[in-house]
Length: 229
Ligand SMILES: Nc1ncnc2c1ncn2[C@@H]1O[C@H](COP(=O)(O)OP(=O)(O)O)[C@@H](O)[C@H]1O
Ligand SMILES: [Mg+2]
Image (cartoon, rainbow, N blue to C red; front, top):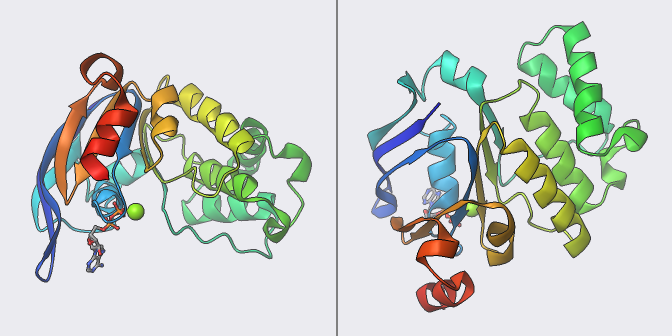
């Protein structure tokens, strides 16, 4: 499967947040790198069908981003994800499953499987408000995977994680990337270096780089500093 982003622009009043972006994604992990305000979240919201582009199109093998069919292919972890602190991890994932229309029996089995996958089985019945940042993000990943998505969009999933959680999280994303189209935004270079085969870089709404960083770019850290600092 391929996700096609074709000349996508988003204008908010007089601010162009995403400026004529075109690229194609296939299976594997692609990192979306850019400083705060670069346009990453706006792009991801458009690619998740929750924000309309001003112009341009997004589709997956011809299935439009606005369609029900696309939604069924998609898993999305928003940057400003709300976790319902009083819910337990299991209840929260079950709740999302219900919202997505899974039947109860399937939802229960899938929830257990996902909590296992993200390493939260033993705290499944604990309230989310007792969780660390990394544990919350893993709940976020679990809910994004509930419908076995072919396209997974993760907006700054490593924000607020400690170094140990970060490594664990990377391993999980890398595993998912084997058979899923994963787009992963971050402003932390080391997140990308370890798992992304490909990197897209945004600056001021523009796509300023699209390639395999280790071959085309040499030292990403240095390149990134030059671009952003
Ligand atoms: N709903 C909105 N209304 C007006 N401006 C917005 C809105 N959302 C984002 N922007 C602006 O668009 C630009 C890109 O923001 P964003 O996509 O959040 O970037 P990033 O995720 O890379 O930090 C910023 O200048 C931001 O202020
Ligand atoms: Mg953002």
